[in-house]
Length: 277
Image (cartoon, rainbow, N blue to C red; front, side, top):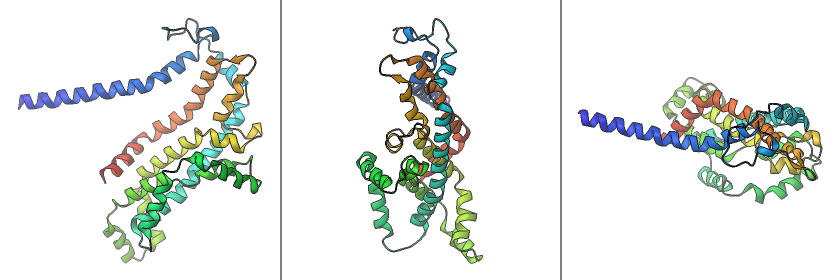
């Protein structure tokens, strides 16, 4: 018994060591970015030195003054929140339909939807841009969020989660007189909080980090997002002030980190429940 307990303890210790090493490897670029954001410009490429010789705190206010980042942050927040709201409406409805409703060609349609996940977004970007241009909707929030109004990954994730809900629970609601919409709103959605939190994280991060599409559909500086705004810090004549760029990058990732930390518990629960299915 003692040897068995010792073996289990050793395996747990080994697991934690491996996970800690993986977490550290993932964190290294962020640690380097944050430390380098306090450097002098001439020290950024010095090898073998992580800790700045002189901590230059003014890199942050100077970086924020190099471009209208206040406007960029507002644009990113608006587009990210609109994307999340749109996906919280479209994805649960589609996921519930594919999981619990019976209609003709459901399996075929779902397979077609899955196939769209294999199509690179770059292959449709020209068609999407021409559509926005023909509608005269470039330089608008709608143009930025249009390709992200729904997500097949979110639909698939929610479908798998909804399939874990017993049919007997839905039948009981039907016997009590609830229609499909009432069952969906009062029973299914409250049970799907963890899965919905996962959708919120993925949707917000995807919209916040988008670069190519917002760059394509916006030409007005005041419609740019934070990711596209970083290129305003690159001077073609004077070169790049890397410490200030890294300072701006550090500020830009703070909302994403705050969102993930606040929803981490639900995110883990959502992934775990879907994975168990």
